[in-house]
Amino acid sequence: MLESSQKVILSTMYVCQIENTEPFEKIKEKTMFSDEEIKSKIDELIKNQLVNEDKKSLTELGRNSLRVVLAGGVFDIIHPGHIYTLNAAKALGDVLVVVVATDNTAIKMKKRQPLHSQEQRKELVNSLSMVDLCLIGQEDDIFKTVNNVRPQIIALGYDQVHQEKSIIDGCKRINLDAAVARLQSPIPDSSSSKIQKEYGESIHGI
Image (cartoon, rainbow, N blue to C red):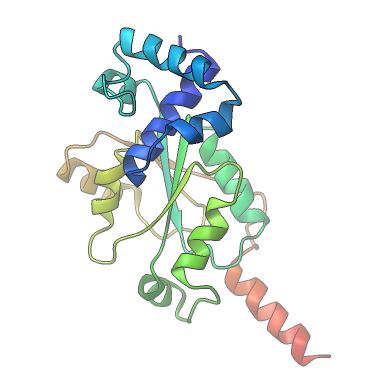
């Protein structure tokens, strides 16, 4: 059984591998350990064959010790339904990776121009405490991102149109054995489109 500090180190290394960034400073921020303590813990993880000799990437055993959850959406206006759903997604595993739709995909899905650009939406989602990593999706094939992340669980929001079967079939195509979890929301009427519409009506009514 991994200690919580070991999980933090492994999770941070996993995220940094995807971002192609150095993990040491991020581990320091998250754990508040001294440089020597971090080095000692990484050496222990190398000894247990969870981290490679480069001290910054996970072995297959290390990667498999983490439960990675993938969630996606437009996230144009962050509302309580999003927070509840993302907290529920994070509770399913150790690492939560969120994919925000590109502007073009958002227009197709919502039939309107998003209020925030894909970069702004990525920044908004990245600032949420339960999110470990936020990525902008791929327009031509969502499974390119899924293949990059290789999650054990794909979490779908209560209102997402994706069919569980098509997600499972797509995962099989990339040799990924991932479970699909359909998350419930206690606020089914809460949506970015509804908030925008109501806000617009209230402005006009002033």
